[in-house]
Image (cartoon, rainbow, N blue to C red):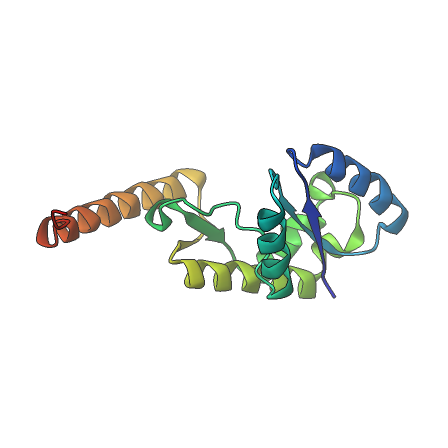
Length: 158
């Protein structure tokens, strides 16, 4: 089972991340998904981050970004698990390459992309250049579509 850890910070969260990394050395077989909510300087910001975590949403680090400009890169579960089993990709805990953990991460990525209107790009078996070309083409299409929509529905004067 994948365990979610939410780091709440009034700064960047780097110190909290270092403390967590040190603690996780003791639990190297524990599969975790770390989410960071930085710059929480006001009580209402903290309350919102906690409420999002309770709902399973986690912090919204991409909040405010134009969803047409966010791309979620995914790949086949078995391929990703195989890549993660290679020694160069081991971050220090065994669950990182566990097929069930990889599947949960990919399902979470796909669900977030659908909920937030992000474009999903499958990178399985593809060269970086191919993926970059697809992202560039999709971004151009999405940008043109948004411009056409804005032309058809101009903002109303106050």
